[in-house]
Image 1 (cartoon, helix red, strand yellow):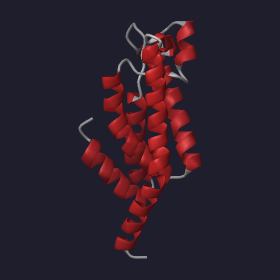
Image 2 (cartoon, helix red, strand yellow):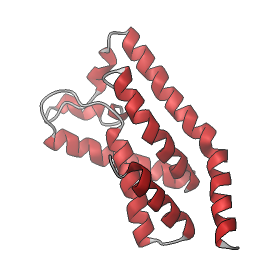
Image 3 (tube, one colour):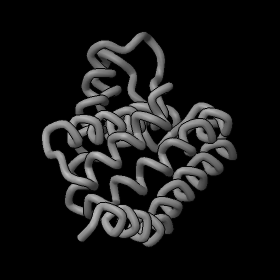
Length: 157
């Protein structure tokens, strides 16, 4: 299979996974709408560093946001990176997501400033790092193309 055929295949696969990525983003927007209607009371399920009750927020903090503006600016890179992650397959997507959420949540709990931490920024940066490290350690046409795209489009994050 030629390089051009492989690139074409990658973009065809990205189009097929775009609906799933869009569905995940839509779920985040529904959660944000419910949170806003409730006066942002769901944000108590964020991470409160160095308090036992803050550990409860580790599985939830990536789904909650401080405002619609916060969610909007997380949604754009997250949509792209979710689409890329889904190219790797559901097991890789699930494993990477759980690892990123748990590790970033624990690190936020250990080292975060006082206050409740919410948002998908750690997920965005975790996926971004995943693709760069994957392109380096497992070079293939897919991993290098995704790594270069991540570096080019999201390098300013």
